[in-house]
Image (cartoon, rainbow, N blue to C red; front, side, top):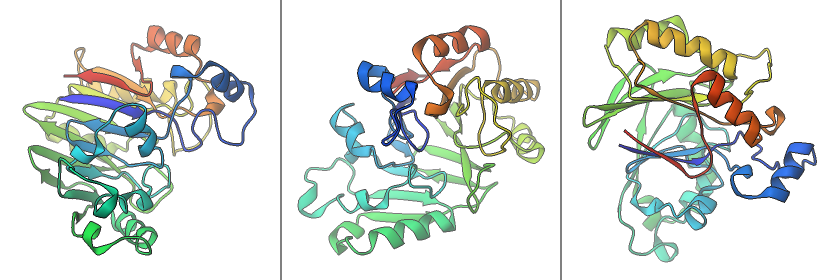
Length: 276
């Protein structure tokens, strides 16, 4: 599997649109990897989330989003699903698309938000190319060659979701925009004996500490990785990628290199590709 981290920032992006903190000023001045867009990850022809920065991911990172056949949405916050952009998928707005149908998977709230915010501009010709699938936590679904386990996230929306993707004997555990996993979730994974080749971890807070259950930092990541390894869900060969950084955690290059050294993780940047 080929995993590409198109967007690696939290909701405000880096630099944040209205912010003039030291981190955001530096990102504007440096450009390159210092600039981070909102979260989107490609796994072959599957996308996790579809943010308002999808245009940027196509135009500047070269992502062929017309080739995406499956879209799994974690939750309906705007930085993870921007329904209006889906109105551009067809009619006179898009020609020669590689995937004529986009299958969209999400919770009831997520699917409701997509329909509500796209209905005014969604043409019937475009709607015909979208197929919706309702998800709940602790289910197993298939999407083409993918087998997907759905997990509950710890986040402030109705039924936020996390995913374990399996294809061709390889597994990716995607834990983005969530606090630590519950014992029930860990047991669910353990019972299925699914050893993962790569785990993506929410690292919104990086080295900083915020007493919330909606996100994680490196300290929470380390505890979770220990528990995942103890239960046989990951092992020493599992790639560990941290992403979804906030400008408030000041994710400058030197701090990310320190995180990689001290915690044995890969700090994602926009456009990072990992193959397993």
